[in-house]
Image 1: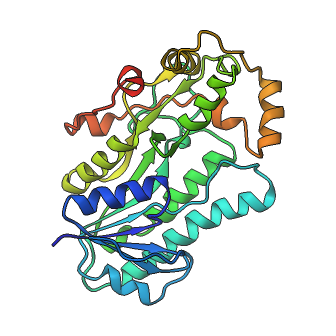
Image 2: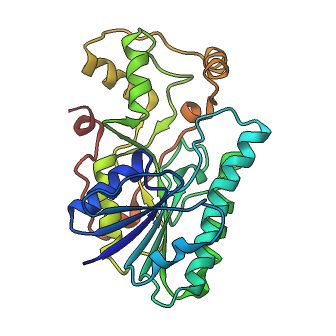
Length: 299
C-alpha cells in the first residue's frame, strides 16, 4: 500500500487532502499537535511542529511527504502574530528536513506548502512560475523565507515541489463563507477599486492537483495551484450576488475596509492585493481543472 505522511493535516485544506488520499487507497499518517482517534486508512501521530522526535519513524518507507503547516494569516500583523506566522512555517519545514536527512528509506517526493502571495500586486498581467515577479512587504518575505528553508534541503536527493497555492475555496471553509455573509447583509459590493484580481482554487481541484503532482516526476520546484479563471474582485462579488439572488451590494471603500479589518482582527491586504496567478506548469503538464472559471465555481 502507498504511504503518505502529511504534516499539518487537520485544517481545512489538510483534512480534505488526507481524506482524499485515504479514499484513493493511500495509507496516510498525519503529523499533528492534536490528539485524534484513527480513521479508516488514517493514523494521527503527535509532533510539536518544531523539533525532531519519535515521529521521524513515520517517514521510513513512505512514498510522499506533504507539509501543510502554517499559522493562519487571517489576523492583525502585530509583532506577536508575525513571529508566529514565520515560526509555524520555518520551524516545521526545518524539522522535516532534519528528519529526512536521517531517514534511510526516504520518500520519493516532498511537497511543501507555499503561497501565491509571493507574487507582486498585479493588475496588468498574470503571474506564472517562469515570468512572475515577486512583490515586497511582510507577506512576500514570509513566502520567500519559507521557500528558501524548503529548498535548502536540495542535497537530500528527493524531488521537491513548493505548492504556491492561491485562495482555496470549498464547502466547510475558505474565503467564500465570509464573502457570502457580506453579500447576504447587503455589503457585497466591490472592495476598494474592485479592479484587483482574485485568484482561487477549489478544494476539489487542490486535492486533484496534489495527486497529479505526486504522480508526475517532471514537476519539481515551484508550481502554482490556482484555477486559470481569475476574475476581478468586482466580478467575483457580482457573481456571488447573482448566486444569492441579491441585486445590490454596498461598495466598501478602503477606509471602511480598514475599519472593518481592525474590528475583525484581520488585514485589508487579504482582499485588496491583486493576485493574478496563472497555473502555467500544471496546464503544460496536462492537468485539467474541474472548477476552472467563476461560472463552474458559482454553479
